[in-house]
Length: 306
Image (cartoon, rainbow, N blue to C red):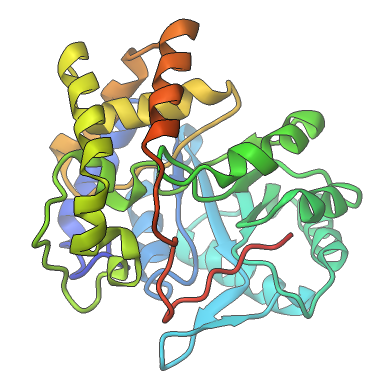
């Protein structure tokens, strides 16, 4: 709403949109101290004040941005404790439902982070905790110290790594999966065309998927999803979200939007179901139309823990 996708949206409009989401049954709101930084937590706190008993709030710690835009990682227990106290003030609440380590810090053993999270749980400041952009080894190590509530990795029709290397360990330990960017940052909405112009502050400028040559190279995939949507009297975004929801019963995607009609469109995805045969055919077609470009460009280094 005010970070990563160009110019921030008017706060009044975003608060109204969050209120509409609650009225429509949305119960999980995901933010982070680094969004802004801090301004998104402040927005969420103002919007959900008085509605706290109806919703769950997730936020994140462990990263900040340097002046050049590069990430600074700091998962030391003292640092994340100070971050949590700041998040609670900005969110206007006495607890966070899920507190994520935003990115794995190789300088701090994940067991130390898990120990700090166990302390926060004992103090009632968080209900549960999670990790973001991690693989099975890190999950297992963290789980051995303090059981995880959720893992938040990027996952969508076009980014499927977690499906192949992480789902088994999540199922083994009973950990929820929260896919971020389930619409591939808008790529799967049916609105992305060649010639797309992104403003300087739009994070998608770091993603090869949004370059003209790659939009064109993956036109068959986008057309296929569009055809499925037409057959179902749905939108491409609804098909993409329904696909994510159909993968496992313990998946809770977090699509983002700044527009009321997109909010209602996204929620409509829960009405779409696929039979086992339909899903098998869907996945077979996806395997024939793979994504052929890297996830990030050279300016942004991917950081996924093992």
